Length: 138
Image (tube, rainbow, N blue to C red; front, side, top):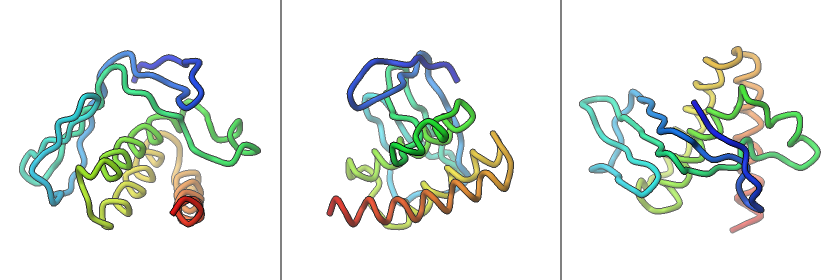
């Protein structure tokens, strides 16, 4: 995955090439094709393409933990999670199951990029932190 760090008040990174990954789960949608991402069903799998130019903020965390958690080995998982959340919030895939699924995809990618202990620790923090953040913003 190739990206660059950018100077922007909301985003920290920008993809410099397309990233494609496959999740083995059937979604309740007919397909999504947006400017910077798309989801395409392939039988029982979904191929997600995140396009060059997509921007994301890395791991979202409280400021005191941001430097500790915003490491290169966490960025792909954060990118994938952000794309799923954007699709949910853009009403492209609307189902509470999708939020839980987005969190699990984050955990699965971290298991690949780090180890199971780190993956589950980050996953628990994500689930608990997302609940707190969601309560503050709703």
